[in-house]
Structure formats: structure tokens, C-alpha cells
Length: 156
Image (cartoon, rainbow, N blue to C red; front, side, top):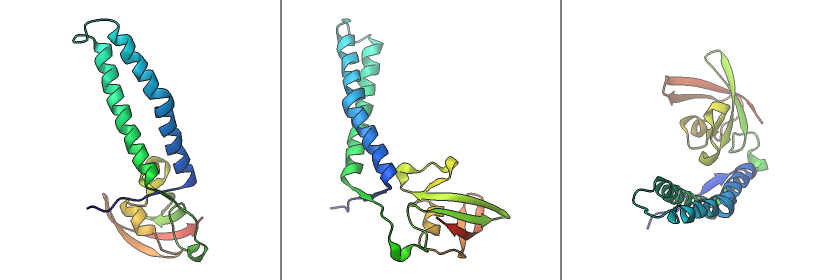
């Protein structure tokens, strides 16, 4: 029997997943069901593109709903531990210096990651490298551009 995955989420991330779940369940899936019924009323389903598109949409929506339900069932809200407030944790924004540049990253759960906007997953190479380290730590991280040295200069 495999171990079930825990999904670490911020309060904002949990709310976003709940919102998407409820939107699918209460709005999107009933809309798609309505489109399927309308397409069925048009007759010959074998050549009805609207029907087939609606069925595909329904399959995707129901699959996504199951995925979101699983995440919600296995979600663990990330709370701040005062004993580790000087070390990088999920939910923190860490500013690092590398190659004469500095950049801020917010460490989030994979479902909340948006690297273009500085939100990196705690499971990413950078996220894993930063976790648990204090200001001043120098870390070597293997990135697609090669091994880079990062120095943690601030944690918020």
C-alpha cells in the first residue's frame, strides 16, 4: 500500500482550490450537462461536434473535480512555527543574491507555484534548497543553467 501524499497549502492556496472546486461542482459541470442535453436534442450524435466537445469537457471537468477533492482531502494548512521563524519555511518570501543579482521568491505548495511571478514550489530544486536555512546561508543549487551559488539575504 502506497503512502498518501500530503499537500501543504497556504491559507490563500487552500481558498483558491476550494473556489475552483465549488466553481466546477456548482457552475461548470451543470453548464456542461446542459450543453450535452441540448446537443442530444439535435438528433444524430455520431456527427454532432457540439455533443462530442461537451462530452470531452465533461470528462475533463469531472477528472479535475476528483483531483481537487483529493487535494482537499489531503491538504495540510501551513502554519508559522515560531521556533523556526529565522529559517526559510513554506509560505515565506526569501530574498537571495546570486550572480550579482537579487531576487525574491515565495515558497509555496506545488499547486500554488507560479515561477514567472516568483512563487516557487517547496518541491522545486530552489525551494528544497532554501527550506530550513537562515539569513546568511550560502547554498549551491543545481539549476538548468548549471550549479549556482545563492546567498539568503532576507526572510519575510
